[in-house]
Figure 1: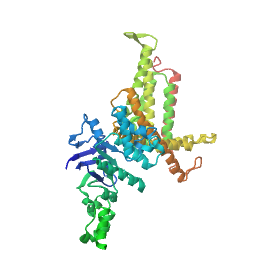
Figure 2 (figure 1 turned 60 degrees about the vertical axis):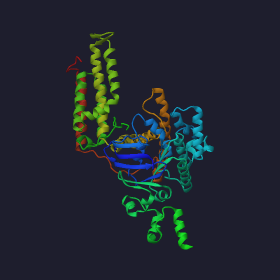
Figure 3 (figure 1 turned 90 degrees about the vertical axis):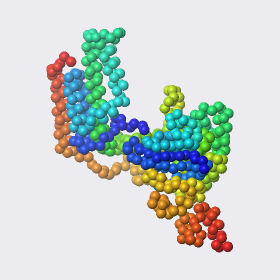
Amino acid sequence: MKIAVEIENLMFFYPDGNKALDGVSFVVPERSKTVILGPNGAGKSTLLLHLNGLYTPNRGKVRIFGKLINAENIREIRKKVGLVFQDPDDQLFASTIFDDVAFGPQNLELDKKEILRRVEEALKAVDMWDLRDRPPHHLSLGQKKRAAIAGVLAMEPDIVVLDEPMAYLDPRGQEEITAILNRLNNEGKTVIVSTHDLDWALEWADYVVILNAGRVMAEGDKSILTNRRLLEQNGLKAPLLVTLFEDFEGKLGIPTSLKEAKQKLKKIML
Amino acid sequence: MINVNTIGQYIPGNSLIHRLDPRTKFFTLLVAVFLVFFLDNLVHLGFLLFGVILVTFLAGIKPKMFWQALKPVVFILVLALILQLFFTPGEKLITIGPFKITREGLINSGIVFLRLVVMLLSAYLLTATTSPTELTHGLESLLKPFGRFGLPYGEIALMLTIALRFIPTLTEEAERLIKAQESRGADFYTRGLSKKAQMMLPLIIPLFINAFKRADELAVAMEARGYRIGAPRGKLKPLKFTAKDYLFLFLNLLIAMLFVILKLWGGFPAKF
């Protein structure tokens, strides 16, 4: 297993002296679908801002593909790690979606042909190519979100980090985003997502980090999400599948995806 | 982090000055500003500055805090001093190259300096010792008499409250915007002036759009809670003058009168 992100004893204090991250250590395997879970105020967003050097740690280390983030390689790191903010309105500013997605590549001082290629590719990846000439502020939230993701994809990062990508989206919007994330992962990108939607995490993730009060409480494959006690101790709720199957654990075991659950049920019913 | 600790920042405390009625403090500021322009004598202005410093001391505000708030305007202060110092015609004292310093220039720059410092310090004192809520209540109450001439005093006060309320929100938002654009390779810190101006666009446009959106939502949310422009509203904490307010107002008038007499009498270092 190669490692995409390695965080070692990360400490971060807000300017008012409040501790946001209190010695966070974990790794993100390359090409994984990693979720960072935790209740509100656990430090998820603050942690994500460290992944491409937007925050510099008060203490501790952040390594991207083995390289320590420092002042010299920050431009390189930001090309490798793309960060999508929770609220797309924090990011979209240009008069058309196309121009907005081109903003990142322009900052990289690429030539025109390359910029156009990247913008087209990014917009097609999120299914927004047909809406490229629309002003962002007249789009639906789901479309804005996809545009914001395209803006980051145009930087061609190896690691894509998304802060609560499902927040406020309708079921269809959530499905579309999930499909995009899966596609990115299939292309070989490492995808890191912060969320507190346990049902979605159980279905989608293959690597799980649980954060609470600025500390990592658990880290590993998604069998972590079947541990009700651990989840509840950290302000989270067990996924529906776990709640449903835990009474029959001895007989059926606990499934870690809807597909697996269906198979188990079919087996005993048919 | 963007620095918001400038002039206008409230510094919570429980000093005598903090506990005064906001209207008393408004009135005192008015008296101080009147005196600043009325007096034109270095020594008289010196007395005034001494008085204001005394009040600062009473308010428990350390010189360091005032200095921090003053920093952004120091440039203007120094510029005004230099202009006065070198470009006032009169009796020559010292010559430095093509510039000459005159006796009148020296006195004038002293007066300008004292006037600016007294004004800044008294305005600073008002906002530093009065919470934004009190400030708007005081303003509302002072503007009330003009209501019969059609002045929407309630709305003005509410506008001020909301404006003050959103300063930290907007700074926070600006910070988040900077981060969002930085993660797309934008560089806000190390380029030339024209590049810098260009980089402001991705910052200012979303900031404005979000602010308008927020204003719209706030307006609807307020209406949903029964707010109507122009309609009378109940008072939660009516302002009340206490003994210390009357004492302070009395002292204000007394000091103002003393200064007026001092100037009209013309004596007491009249030469300055």
